[in-house]
Length: 331
Image (cartoon, rainbow, N blue to C red; front, side):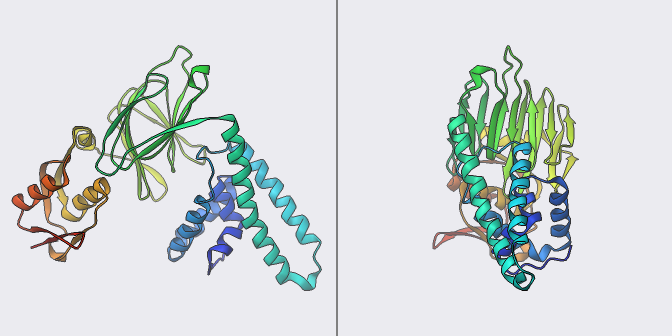
């Protein structure tokens, strides 16, 4: 696939991008993913196009894949019909029309899909600010603990025996209750869905990472292409290069945030600071590159940023300085 986009309008107009974004035609979606993997220099432009599309979303609930496929096919039929009406001499005009057909169609699909589900499925949401943890009981008795800077959205009709669906942005620990009807509990992330009946697990769905740690029961992960992965207690799975990978994971370390702690074991300073920035929404800069890989070890408090920074300053051979709204780590 020979593509070299120069602006987001061309990306939005691309048939394979549309299939990838709307999770519609599987073959086109895979072709776009293969092209993106082979052209990493285009990733930032694709990300801008995706962000633009995200801003058009009315409701977070995703449309069923069959409905997306039907919309995609009808859209293509309309575009092709438009193209057939054009004379050969107006090829450039056709391309322009086709491009903006796609851009307009993206809005139409979002709006009609969003309004449909807003009418059919009322939703509630729970969110946390930077530095905040929150426990919430869901309509079925399930309990969820949200880490800082996280949001869950869920439908309200769980008492009717329907699937219990949750959409997550950020990090949360779920303790799922079993129901008499044994209805499925589904957690949607950007890169996979988690399907359970009764269990406990931790899931992270942030911009740069998605992972899950299963502590009790069993779950099934379903990828966008329909592949299923079964997990048992103790399994830790994360997405790397768009593939699910089972890795070694320490339950104590991964769940330390619930006890307002950070546990580091030979963790490079730069990675430890990423965790702090993620939790508190602050900007931290390492002034000396030679200390970025200094190993951090120990259990640090994570309920107060000032106390956390003082612990770092007192424990390791570097200084923590606050200056002009920025936190600087220096030798």
